[in-house]
Image (cartoon, rainbow, N blue to C red; front, side):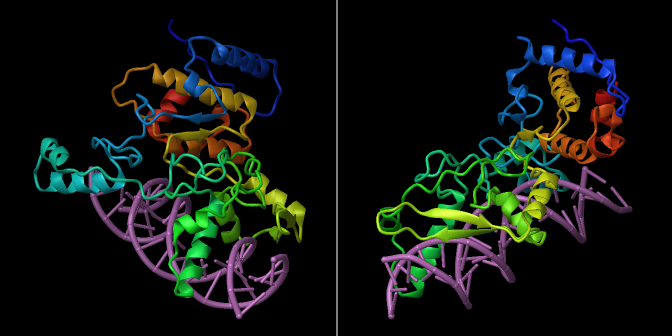
Length: 309
DNA sequence: ACTAAGTGATAAGGCGGAGT
DNA sequence: ACTCCGCCTTATCACTTAGT
């Protein structure tokens, strides 16, 4: 079945019948059996090898994500450029290229001590356990003792379960007691900690679980910062549509679905670029993609042409 | 297409506070 | 005194963005 082409709603100010009709129609199409289930949730997680939105580096076995608009990761793209300058061909490049491991922690499974919490780094520990291990190791070394991981691990217990990151558009779980994921915690710190949210750790009495409270100088300022924060610009195929208005959210899903069914040649859309568009839509609080003047600037001619057709 | 500058992600260490 | 934690800063490399 070929999908119908839909014109985008153009009036962002009026709650018109046309807009509600469009939303209902799109929601029905998205819920339908022919719609790609990968693109259905509000947090879309695209597999590495997905045909149009895949993000695997073109070098076989390389685990890094590809550069925006390029076929290889940052390292291999530079290497391929060097090969081209030297007049060598793609066969020689692929023969020479060594698969690389990502430096950043992505798709690392869950914490070995907190089974429901995603691992933060390559050591299979959540953000808090990872920080605790670093502290403990440094302390042991300062005192001239071996930082034996097994010794430390034997004393670890699951930490209190944390909810989702307080940034509404963020698809990650909170990694810190103040309620932010590690990425947003760092950004919060860099932006001067509005509201000055601080975790107070009550050390456990013998045999009792640890408890935590959060203190604020200005809780409203903290919540305001969370509401305005944008999602991370990730390169691992995660696209968060949270925070978008319903029609724009449905339009993005529909456009992604339609594009994935189109001709394959020249059709690669980097998910990181789509996330930038979504973030801009969220920032401008737009109703429909047609309201977004920045579509062309952000997405380039190829994508904006498809969106606005 | 290329490159320089900027940003993000991870790791490490210092300091002070607080429980044992 | 010992131990552990929160908070902060810094370093480094990976990755993104903007300009040409």
